[in-house]
Amino acid sequence: MQTGTFVQDKVVLVTGAGGGIGRDFALALAREGARVVVNDLGVSVNGEGRDLSRAQAVVDEIKAFGGEAVANGDSVADWDAANRMVTQAVETFGRIDGVINNAGILRDRFFFNMSVEEWRAVIDVHLNGAFYVSRAAAPHFKSQQSGSYIHMVSTSGLIGNLGQANYSAAKLGIAALSKSIAMDMAKFNVRSNCISPFAFSRMIGAIPTETPEQKARVERLQKMETNKIAPLAVFLASDAAADVSGQIFAVRANEIFLMSQMRPIRGMHTEQGWTPQTVAERVIPAMKPSFYKLDRSQDVFDWDPV
Image (cartoon, rainbow, N blue to C red; front, side):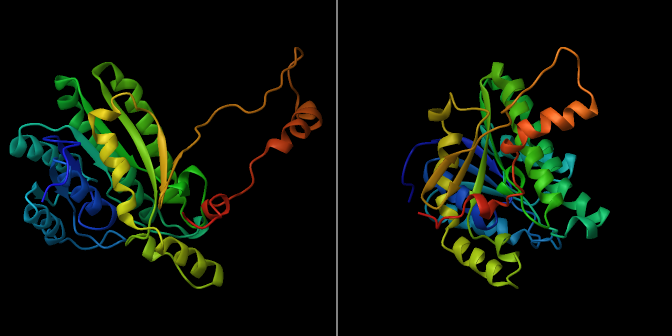
């Protein structure tokens, strides 16, 4: 049965909601009174195949406890399909109040071996997909003077990771997209935020476990359940988050972090202007203590989850 009314009668489209974090979003939203469009193409982790039954299974779960939901099997990587899923929300439930851009695939490869197809496939689903679905919902949000975007990003982009140039670039691009949406849509009372999740999902399960370090990392991730991410997403979709926009959060088991954004940390100037020699002699030695290391996500978040 429904457990709360935090997002009562709001209509939320969740992409990639056939399993993992997206499924938990859909279930949590429905339990708090939202009507949910469960989008999932039903593809494998690397983007192959198609199966609407995954989305329908989540819809059936929601209906079983008295919630309202409808399945959608369109691809976020297609502009017309993105518009169809938004149209389905409006035609089925009368409006759309929130979009959670969660759909994603992985094509991990070291940069020097990455193919153009592997690059494009990940950019299309993550970055282009986030734009397409968000843009499709924008006219509705503008006309009703309200709406919430929630975009899933990753510390692979915010911090860094090996073998994920495509995924990292897409996820950091989404963070910038979210900030732009937040600024452009603020006058319409529309907000946009990001969540960087730590959780063991189908995508995380594809991480190699060939070395002791990789095995330890996956074991740590397995302790972080996907449903731990949902409470923050439900909050951000609610009216209680009316003054929260342009932010990047991270969730790691029972921990919630506000992530930093790009700002200057050191500056130098000279009236004479710089030359390559004076840059080498003065600027770099002064700034070098503040340089960032080539840290990976697990180097920064190096403690066990709480």
